[in-house]
Image 1: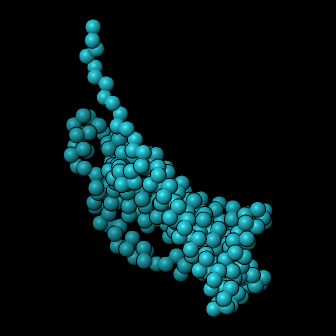
Image 2: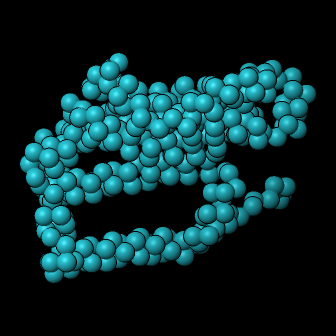
Image 3: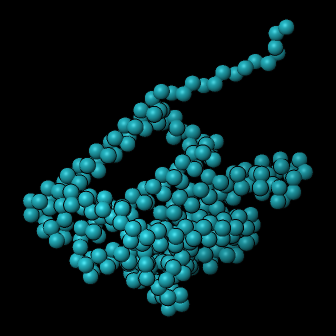
Length: 280
């Protein structure tokens, strides 16, 4: 007796996807090598004094030394701790407010003037105020991170809530779903790609603000404070460049992890499917 169910075969994976990604990584690495080679030639030839632009080979050597220096890594961890706490608070607060404002046109219209007044204020301009109120410890950095990163998460959440298909919400209601159930099963999943885009932007901004606050406010610890001491008191531009490269690598690593998380949990969205097809 034959089975009435028909097994649908899986679409085969395209063999070119992995090789395409590897070739992109190789091209990126070659670009970095070309940049360092140009910097090495400029420094060694005397076009720019080594006191302002140390040779790239020396800077790369310092990068390796700093990556195994416990004192330096402790300063990096202090920056990442403030980054993580500030970003976490931002996500909880901004997503909550964004959902509320995105679900109510009246609430959004009533709060829009206040939001538009606060949003253009640069976080750097608030450093003196934050120092007066909170000092130059981690609380100051966290407060600045929360303020500066709230806007991309907040607005992306609002836009995501506004973009929810009204027919999907009506369908959920027709099946007896309440407001909370419709929010959790329809609105939030639909707005999730927008929210995660805001989080990715906020993660980069949070790292920039954390290091900038440490540099400009003379924080008690952190990567920015370490760079300030190395440049001002130690007169070591090679260490400053090396720390800057490490900061950039941290930013790349954060973005890479967030991209992996996005592909893992939001692989159903059309934009990611198009990207996967393009790399295949």
